[in-house]
Length: 109
Image 1 (cartoon, rainbow, N blue to C red):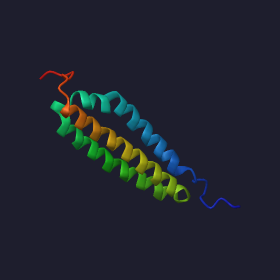
Image 2 (cartoon, one colour):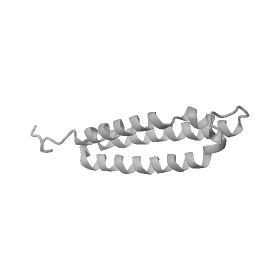
Image 3 (cartoon, rainbow, N blue to C red):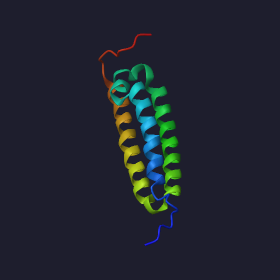
Image 4 (cartoon, helix red, strand yellow):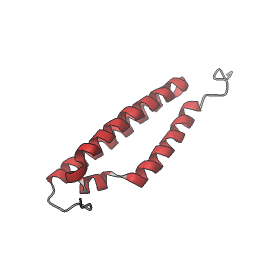
């Protein structure tokens, strides 16, 4: 079968891998659901603002990858939706658990 993609059949996954790597490294260095839970009393509103921005940004990048790599768009979109839903759920849980906890946070203001 002829390659009708002009050699670009893996462009969508390559794009997502590159973007995910950068985001993963930055996010790992900055925060996690665990630290969000620990410091929810002081950061809950700001945290969720940035989680929501991240979801929108991720959705845009997944959409671009799905457009670039149409043969794999189902997998790209499914992976993006699943990862977004899991991560969003983790942060929502962290916020709720942190706000309902009487344990002290790790930050003092």
